[in-house]
Length: 374
Image 1 (tube, rainbow, N blue to C red):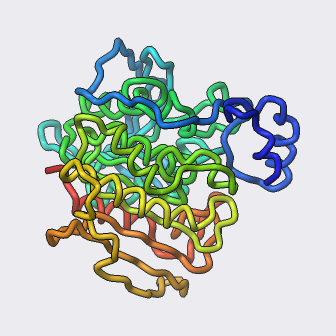
Image 2: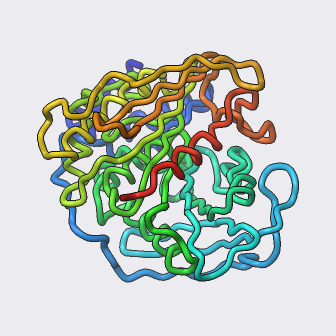
């Protein structure tokens, strides 16, 4: 990855290498953030405080609401919706699903799902089949969408300093979309979650660090630690413990132990599985600081259990569970032995799916529902 070493000393701009990197990604199909983007430097001074309420607008788009729709195979009986959200940081569209039988006044969980690079909200919905599970388990989904005008490859810009802090950039937009759903449907604020795949998994980590008061738990599929920089391609990144400290700083006054599920393929060449290990260490460090304000080993680093299992599709995987030292599970790490860069158990109707693997969608939702916010 010599081209990463050719970044200027501040690591801020990739513009001179744009043609080379575009060719590189086109040839090898890497899911990597758009060209000419600002890379992070140092540890930002990250604010805490209450949820921001900047001027916003949300307008229902044609086709929003009404009867069912498609999400992978088949037609669902619930209600699909779509809107735009705008605040000072910009405008993003989003779509979502409300299961059949929903009644205003009866609070349901909410899962915010963030797509990867080159994907759309609809692609992620089909890939994960999350709406199908939402229908059977009765929760609401929402899929924010990143336009090419914000990133050439439709990646969330999780690696930019402005998009790693509360109250600005894309985190403020995604938090605003989450709050829009909470305000327009009856959502259980203690059971609101965020997950994502690839760049979306990296952004879900950012959302957990910047809005721990909004999300009860997070899920990172093939993701990257907070302030991960160019680490997914073998470039410079923070040490996992430094990243954990940076995430704790991002939490500010809202710091708390945040339940996290990490899911990864052991054969991933786009975001190597070492990133899953870093994510576990990062969140253990963040949680260690969040539980009492001191990095003192209060959160054990050793797993409380590790199981070697085989999926119904015949694929081997391991599940490691980690606790808080007080009898509560706070972190899981799933590693699928033969999976590359993909969503495990995903629909064969999309790229970057591994249908034979364990059901990643169900694993995340089961973990979420077992971890409401205190």
